[in-house]
Length: 126
Image 1 (cartoon, one colour):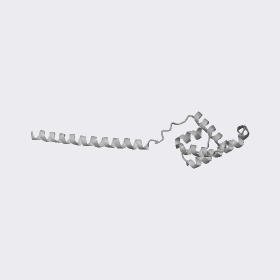
Image 2 (cartoon, rainbow, N blue to C red):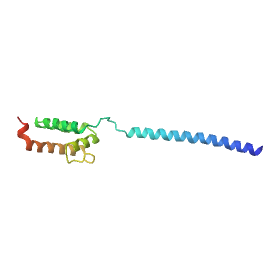
Image 3 (cartoon, rainbow, N blue to C red):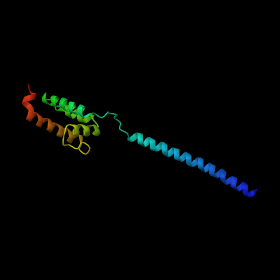
Image 4 (tube, rainbow, N blue to C red):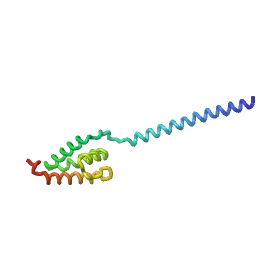
């Protein structure tokens, strides 16, 4: 019987250890979930379609034509990088929105708007 009691004692210790390990595992899972939720974008901005990007570019162009290049600065400042990446690609802008600073993106967009104005200015200034 002494041997049986020792085995039962060991089993009880294993049960206690198992509960401790499960608690630690649950704590790690909870910490990982909290970290994941912290890394999620704070701005739950829905990503635009290419058509929406083109319409936004046209709107910015009209703002630019009416003497308001600050609209571009405001637009870029308000949008997250993944939005600007899609915007740049949809409008064939040569700026890498993932790597470039927002200031650089603003300058690039204004440069493209100025070129568009120079090329098509007579058509849009009626």
